[in-house]
Picture 1: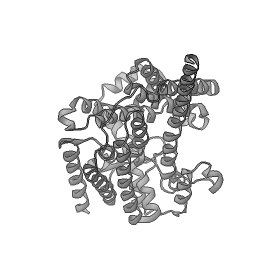
Picture 2: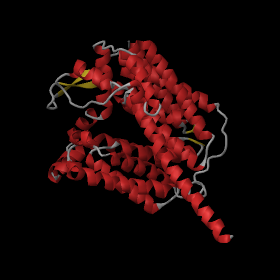
Picture 3: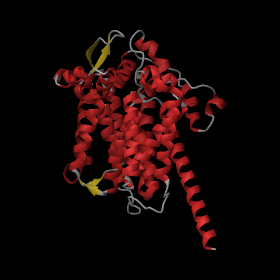
Picture 4: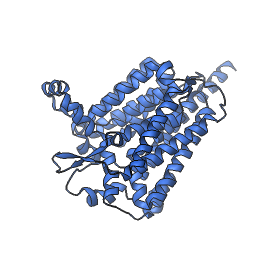
Length: 418
């Protein structure tokens, strides 16, 4: 097992050297590697947290050595994808923005976000002040329009240098943060940074793009501390907030209670307790790719519903998922290997989409594939598919409306001239 630990750290070292220090394009596999490094943080420290009670008592426990086997397969597949992309034809030069393309797209996305926010406030009202766990079952359909519109709108507005639209979208994302959700703000930050780095072409991240790296590192740390801060702010305990900020022990506590440690705990316990599930639920999950999949193939069982009571009965009411734990539980090491290879293959496909597109289409692909590269490690299969559908459908709807408005304006202009 010590060889797995050595292989894990060797892959981390090689990945940081080859993807951040050597001169190359910051591509989708590079983004996936650094996101995996964050979510595999327990592998670096060598421990996970184990809950003792639902009230928050926990102990640190050495991570099971078999977890490093999963990390090695995922990082190996990611670096292999990066190696393939290094030999990929470049395609057309990136064009950060062409104003003629989808001229109203930023406006449509922002308007959609505002409409969704008003809809959510009208339907949920004071429920928006509840905790995240209390609010989740009561989510208004307008919430998806609000957050997807604000996230995609922020990226489009940033690329198009639309300061007012960008400020509106950021404000809506801050309100989402206040409710208790960080995924949308995190995706906006990651997509914008990735867009900037990808469009710069070849370079050394830590040398030529040092400023962007400096923005990325504190952003990651702030998102890790987010849960500890927002709960105190919603209580209005500013005295407690300043006290927590000034206490170094709270930073350590926040890191070990952060999402990477929670999601890797799921993998740790799945491996430690040899928890196995029927793989048939994966086929129903894949059916959700098509519209109305639930109606055609039945309700999907999430991995959380399968493992929670078996592995964490009486402990936490809400745990992050783990895609790799679900793969191991459903098909053992062979399925983990197959899933890792498919992950690497899709990273190559995604990078190909980025390199053969430009303008707004490139931003669309960045938005879609960043969800895949960044967030897969803390989800199960069905929720990842759900996110990818959202990341495709909402921007596509915004684009259809923008194209329709542009065509109507062109027809009106031609009619006026005639």
